Image (tube, rainbow, N blue to C red):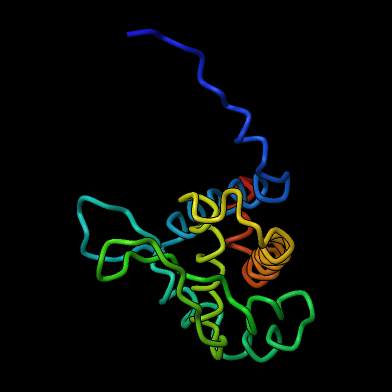
Length: 159
């Protein structure tokens, strides 16, 4: 067996904005758990309770303000697709419906992150749309953080 060098050049296809989104989402997930937005009752996995955060912390008022902002329209009207395995074992993309609530908007934010992190969008020919989704996701996180001083403090580490 011959040992050859691994070609890591493909990882450079990830944009600086995508790398920033990875870092921002990593920190946001930490901060949300830090301030108490984790799924209760689980002893083995500390998982963010995105639904409770969206509905109880952000809520309908945030949705009414954010849904008219130009920067998030791509997340609302053309949310990220979801990659699934079909009945015969093929990877396919499912379109998602237009976002109609704050809970669905936060799910779209996570969809952008998940598609990037899990490799679903690597090398995707729809690069312009992905860049728009990433920019919208970064904008949305910024607005979310501005909603809650405690969350923002945890996110920034400025205790």
